[in-house]
Structures are given as structure tokens and as C-alpha cells.
Length: 136
Image 1 (cartoon, one colour):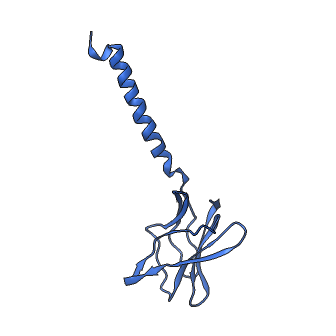
Image 2: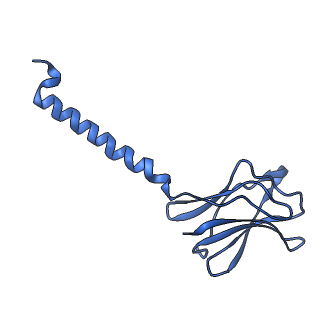
Image 3: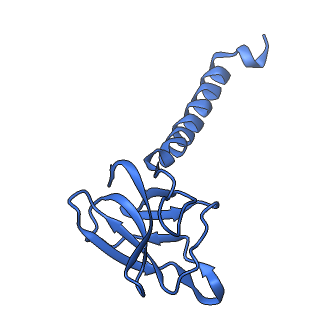
């Protein structure tokens, strides 16, 4: 009798496959809580999107690789929640002309309907991208 046909070998093999599946399946679905905006539209920002994700109970926003930062003095991340509350957040540009492409939202931001790039110097909306429905 082949060793693969022996009931105890089949039982162990089945258990091993089940154990791998139980580990792999939740990991595959871990990123299902990601949401993406439409493309930015505005006077200075017209490319790129934002991805929302949740990790360890905290909301994160990340700009896509095709996002082009505006050539303005003081651009900031800004979000608008489902009730219309506006939260000005971190500067978009950081040292040495690098882009702050990912931020963690403060706990007082309960959901996000729109992401904006705001020029704090000129107090002007430079571009906006919306989620299909508010994300939490």
C-alpha cells in the first residue's frame, strides 16, 4: 500500500493543508478594508488618488504614485468628514522637497468623505478627491 493512501498520512496531510488555509485566508482578506478615491481635481492638483486603510484601529491615507505635488508655498493634507467638518492635517511637503505621501489620521476624525490638498499660505483649495461613500 502506498504511504499516501494510508489513512493516518491522509489525515495529517489534510490537517496541514487546513492549517495553512486558516493562516493564509485571513491574510488575503486583510487589505479588503482599503478604499480608493476618484482622481484629484482642482486648480493645482489634477492627478493621483488616495487610498484609505485601517491598521491596528487607526485610519491611514496614502497618496498614489502618480500624485503630482503642487508648486505652492504651503500645501497641507486636509480631510472633510460626512458631516462637513474640515480637518487641516500635516504639511504635504517635508524636508528636502520630499512628499509626505502617507498620514495617520487623528482619533477625532471619525470618517472621511473627501481628501483635499489645501494651501495654508494662500488659504486656497488646490484639489480634491472623494471616496464613493465615507470611509471609517
